[in-house]
Amino acid sequence: MSKALRVILLTSSYPQGANDSSSGFLYHLSRHLAHQGVAMHILAPSGTTAGTERDGGVTITRFRYLPLRWQKLAYGSGILPNLRRNPLLWLQVPFFMLAMTASLLHMRLKVRPHLIHAHWVLPQGLIAVMACFLTRTPVVVSVHGTDAFGMRGRLLSTVKRFCLRHCNAWTSNTRATAKAVSQGRVLPSPRIIPMGVDTEHFGSGSRHRLRDRLVHVDLIILFVGRLIENKGIVDLIRAFAQLPTELREKTNLWIIGQGEMESSLKTLTTELSIGDRIVFWGEIPNDQLPDYYAAADLFVGPSVETPNRGAEGQGIVFIEAFAADLCVLATRVGGIPEVVDDGRTGMLVSPRNPTELANAMQRLLSDPALRQSLANNARVLARERYAWKKIASEFVALYREITTNRNGE
Image 1 (tube, rainbow, N blue to C red):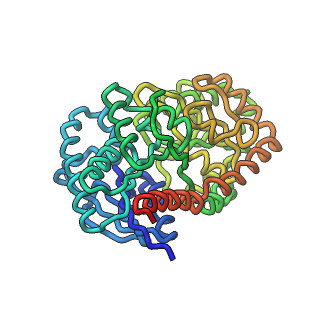
Image 2 (cartoon, rainbow, N blue to C red):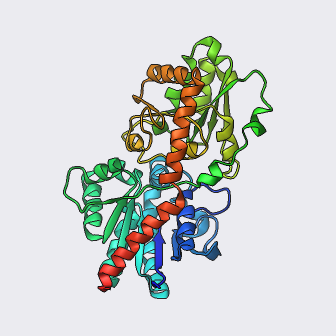
Image 3 (cartoon, rainbow, N blue to C red):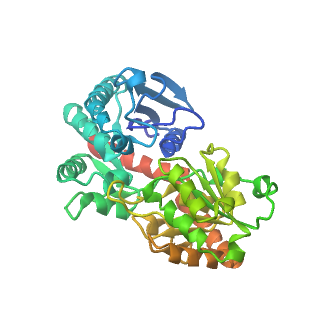
């Protein structure tokens, strides 16, 4: 019988409660790794509370880098958006990195892990690699997208490549993400291991629970995500306004999420005289999301690439829609074409083109058979490729390969 692995998962955010969506995929990944016999120890910055807790076989330690009332760097929209919104937060970065490094070294002495798994190459990957130099503990670094497509300056790019050359292995959620972080430079080959979804959870929604309340609505278009520029929501609203009047009058656009653009988006709907057909739901708890997916007829994610935030590395929401048996319309940006196979598991259009997006929306809304065919293929793909049990098993295999090679077993 193989020995149980002990792993420290290092991250800049981890859910602080049942309804917190901050890096929710790490919550599911760590629990499924624990189910497969890995002793998981999460190290993340504190948000509202600090300390150590146990949850579902996972040990979570939250460190403080400043007095709790002053900590504003992590959580919310994420470190990079928080820094762009308030440049004074750069003053907290050194304290954050020092506290994470000290906490990691202390946890390493206490846990004696077989390896450290750092999520996002900066700053976690850098801190883990530095710890590896000091302790010789193997390191896996996972790149997710924002750290590949964003943080593009010469110095940051050099540091990222340094981390990926000196860790024991690195993973990327898509080939596009891996290409973005390498920028044409020679790096060790990554393992392409995407993040998954709870396919059973997102396939459990009730189509009628929400739709039974509606009047004069035959069709629902759904968007789920942060209300920020690179999600392309302005294009979605403009495309909705371009739908033929007869189709638009029997369709609602549901927008789920919060973000810095919420006020300007609502203003745009008023300017386009379509505010009565659009519902801003705000943030919806994860346990309620399946009903919204089930109620919808079409999921649209018109992501774009922006200088500040880059492009979508994978797009978890598309896989959630797959699992919910919902047809997906997306854009050819970042890693999305590796998730949404145009004409087989969904439909792809050019980014920043509301007219092309509107034409595709009209085609799919007018053809239920096509929508269902694409959704059926996507549901099968979600279960076969993106179920958490499979994703966790791929990481376990990587962990064992690294530790076996290191120990010469």
